[in-house]
Every structure is written in C-alpha cells, then in structure tokens.
Length: 344
Image (tube, rainbow, N blue to C red; front, side):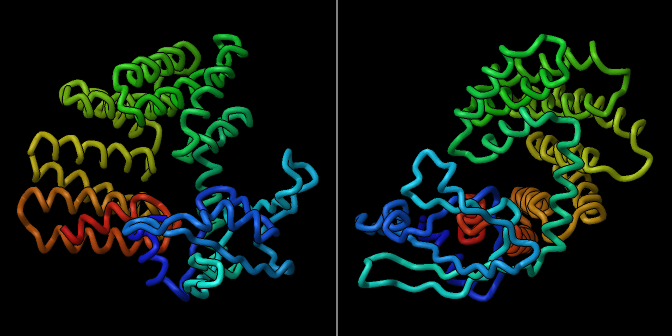
C-alpha cells in the first residue's frame, strides 16, 4: 500500500469504509501474510499491510461465505465478502513480531441504507445488460483486470450473432479498455460500432443513444477535436431532453462533459456554468457522499485553478477529498491523486 493511502487509513480510525468490489480473504494467517507482502523491504512510499477482519455472523446486511470447498486452491481457506460490505476501522498499528502493519476492521451494517441506495442505482444503470456482460463488467471495474476483461469481451463477441442485443454493450467495454490504455483511435472505432448497431436495432431517440454519443464525444474531446465533441454531446443532450422530462444522471453527465470541454477550450465561464449545472443535478439525484458528486467538485476546482482563483479551487479540492474519503475504499488511487492536488 502506498504511503499516501496508508496515511488516509491512519486518519480514518473510527470511521466507516466500504469495499469497491468483492473482497477475497483467508482464515489462514500464513496465507494472508504471504498475500500482504510480509518480509518485503519497507520503502519510503510502500508499506506491507495486513487487514484483520472481525465479523459477527448475525449481521443482517453483511454477506460473506466460505468458498474453500469450491476454490481451485482449497488450502488457502478463502472467504469471499460481498461487494457492498461495510467496515469500521478500529486500529492501525505496527506488529513488530510479524514485521507488518496491521489494520483492524469490524464488519458492520451501519450505513447500509446508503449502500442500498448505491445498489439500486447500479441496478438501474445495468438493467439492460445480461449476466454474461455484467460478469465482464465486474472485472473491468478493477484496473488490474482490464486486459483480462477485454479478452473476455472479445471472446464473448465471437460467440454471439452480430445482431445480439449484448453486442453494443460489448463494443462499449472493449472501447473503454482501449481508452484506459490511451488507444484513442481504437476506442473511437469500437464506440462508433456500438452506436451504428444501436441505430439498426433501436427506435429513433432511444435512451441508449445518449450513452453512445456521450462516449464518442469524450474521445473527440480527448483528441482535442472540440467541434465534433460538442456536436456529439449536443445530440446526446437533445435526445436526453426528449426522453426525460425531469433530471437524469445521463443529463448531468453530459453537463459535466460540456463543462470539461469548455475548460479545455479555455472558455472558463461557460465551463463553470455547465459544471455547476451538473453538480446541482447530481446533488438532487444521488445519495451524498457519492463519487460522481466528488468528481464534479474536483472538475469545478480545476477550472477555478485555471482562473487563478486559488482559494475557491482549494475549497473544491478539500470538499472533493473529504467526500471521497467517505465513499471510496482507502486504497483507491483517486485519494492519493487528489490529496496531491491540495498539497501542491
């Protein structure tokens, strides 16, 4: 674990954290120590950390299971903890005997209402995707497994007829994998394939077009082809306004994208206008704290920084960081990155 991530844990004793995916652990201390990096040389920026988790089986909203009997490595005594689990940070201390840092966690159902809100939002966003696509999506959301997810989707694509309803979603995930690797032309090509198939399969102005146009706009924005980016965002916004008579997450996302576009074009007043619209819509739609709200605050802060309004920028960065501390896992890379924004 990085020094910055570890410092966040130390400051967070007594607070709640939630996992960002399924958590695999073990009842066997020897196995856990090996995975935690016991014996590794401690450096100025990396620590070996062992998490010790205490679980009361009577908790109603904490799901976990022994999976050693179905695992390919039964000797690891693996326990799988649900992706929506919450923990209280009890302690952070150095175990000199084991030569490792220990973080004590207690499973809790505190904050389960917020977790349930996130689950319902996630289910709404994923409602049109099949189990096969969702399986790949879970892998894709973990940065370490993006390449594995991409290969999974490419294999899945070969097994389906070209007119299958999953195909546009698969092209989207393949495109997103290329985007994460900086392969913008390949990302654009796959996003455009998804959009073309949706045009053949779906009625005019279907809501799925919004996501496709938004994705294509993001690539053009990254390539600094701002006119094409704006054209795609504007088209997506028109469809969204025809599809939703009230606020929508998709519309808030387009507002945020337009704000980032105008920031890149150095039209800073327009950027702030769009980003503030996005922020207020997110606040109306999402449970706070939420990563989308935090991200939007950070983007507003970046515009203020460009305007040299340093006090306003720092205010946004502090609010972003405080919110992310509450809604992101302690090892999430954004925490270290956004702490640097404040320090520097």
